[in-house]
Image 1: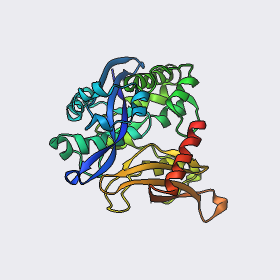
Image 2: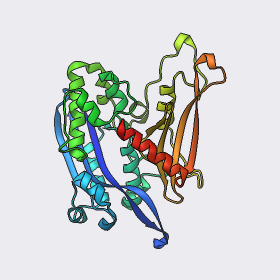
Image 3: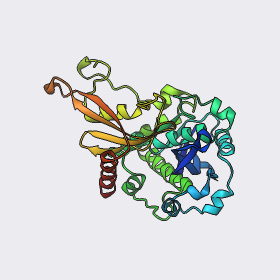
Amino acid sequence: MKTCIIADFEWCVTPHPVNGGERFVYFNEILSAGAVRVDESGSVTDRLYRLIRPVNADYLHPVVLTSLRLDRGELAGAQEFSRFFEEFRAFIDDTPVFAWGCADQSALTQNVRIKGSPEQKLKCPPGTPALQMRDLQPTLCRGLQIHSPYPSLAAVLSRIGLKNEENRHNSLSDAEDTAQIVRTLVRNVPASVSVLFSGGSRVSKEIVTESPETPENGITLPEGVYRSVGECLRTARKQRRLCPVCGDPIGIGTWIRCGQSSLCTLCCCMKDGKFLCTVEAVPGTNEKSGYYTVKTANEPFEGEVRTRYAAARRAVRKG
C-alpha cells in the first residue's frame, strides 16, 4: 500500500555566531520534530519524534519554551541535529513528504546549512531545499471547501469537529492531527487527497508545484500574469527569495496577510540579517480584464517596517 509522510517541526529564533563570533545571524533553530507515516486508508502506520539539541540552550526564549512545553535542560541533553536529520531521511526513504504550511521546509533547510554535518551541507547547496516538502494547506482546504487563505491547523481541526488544545504545538501531536484531517478526506472525498500518495520525496515537479490551471476560454496568459488575487499570491509565495544585499537565497518564515491583496513574511539572510518580504497582487493595465501581476518588496526589518509587521501579526491572531 502506498504511503506519505506528514512532518512537523517546532523551533525558536536563535542567534548563530559567524566570523569567529564577531557577529550573529538569526535562524529558526528546530527544537523538536515529529513525523507520521500515513497509508491510503488514512491510518497512521509509523511515528517518529525527537528532541534536538540547540546550539546554546541559554539562547532559548522562555515564552517559546512554555508554548512548546519543552524543558531547557532536557533539550541541552538531546541529540544533535545532524544525527536527527540522518534518522529522518531513513524514516522517509523515498516517500512523498508533506507539512502544514510552507515554513517547515525553510526551517529544515536553514538547520541543515547551519548545523548539519559537512556531508549534509554538501548535498544542500545554496538555492536548493534540504528536502522537498509540499504544503498541505491548499490540498486539504480544497477538499474541505475552506476558502480562507492559510487557515491555522486548529481552525481546520475545529471544522471537522476535533480539538487538541492540550497538545497544541507539540510536533508529533500536530503531525498526527494533520493525519486526522487526511483520514477524514480519505473517507469523504478520496479524490482530493490522491496526490499525497503519488511520487517520491525526490520527485520535484509532481510533489512541489501545483498543477497548472486550464486556460479559460482557450486563452493562455503570458508569464507573470494571473486571473485572480488568490492565484497571484499562491504563485508568488512559492518563488525562491534572494537577499536584496548579497543576492544569496534567504530563509523564509510563514506568510501572513498584511492587506486585502498582499502577504508578508519575515526573512533572514545569514550574512545580512532580517528583512520583511512583501508580495502584492496588483491589477493589470487593462482594469476590465481582471488580471493581476505581482509586486514585491524586501525591506530591512527595522523602524516602521518592524511596526507594520507586528500590526499584521496582531491582526492575524485576532482573526
